[in-house]
Length: 455
Image (cartoon, rainbow, N blue to C red):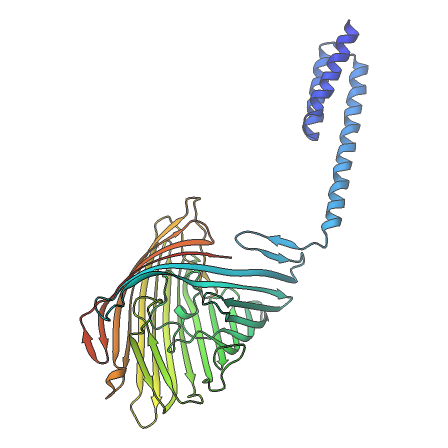
């Protein structure tokens, strides 16, 4: 009877231990065998035999696990590394190359009140503002990027360039882009639509007086941490149908940034300045026009132009960005002078001041002299309130049609459910308006909503 009980206890011990992970398995067996030995249920001889068997089993298990790990490592040694934290990046293990599909979708709903400025031009509707697809990556020190916007139904090329970059010294680096990319001018124009605090840029930005993407060459030298940077560009128009028009103006621009104060990335101040000059082009014409409160409006109420004797332009801009924990402020001023042969010059200027505050404690992210995306601190998302005042003004002596001015105030609420998604609510209102040198009483406004995602 004792032998039967002993056998059952040993069998139960072995079965119970087998149900545990390898490490816990052997530890549990050793403890149980000690108890059985101490109680006299099994002999010391049986205890030593079973203990040695357990140790041998553990060694076999560990050897088998090591062999499996070795085989897995060998099988995956040449496989690429895949990163999926808010994006999909495929790269080799040595970091010599990488490939990333990119894109963004922005859907807007808009309600416009023109306050009687134009008959039958109020309205509401929806718009696919941006629908971009592309890819970017690198091969050793060479980089590449291609992105097109399909929101209008046809492919509108945005970025299409080959780049090269490397260290200049231990603390500085340099790079060059060949193709179509952002020129070296302006903060609000260069800032990505994915990260802007508002649905629309200021009225002067991304326009004829603050150029955006053009085809040519862009070179940059910068501190490795972007405490300072200097960028220049030589371009000749925007790609349209895969090529630029031979009548485009050749533009040269230069822009520098400097960080005079930085406690850390969430407490810092950056200042920047830029200069741009361009020729008259083949048709000797210049035109600036802009909508007041909505990108979807049919009419561009602000307009200034030179018809046939345009003789080139010069422009400059200054900007400042301050980040102080959850609060940020951004200001920019640009001044554009279009020369006209035999007549007075056309002067166009614009400025904007914005401020924002994260109610949930996040900070605007500073990256390479501009702003980037944020990561909510909570699974409930991040909330931000923003406000901006802006002005744009065009003046030319004795040409009433070129004398326009508008002041506009915008307030907004941004909600970030995740790091790659955002919901935006903006209210724009023009508070002072002059068109064709005539002061107007109308104050157009718009209520706008956006749902966006990017990768």
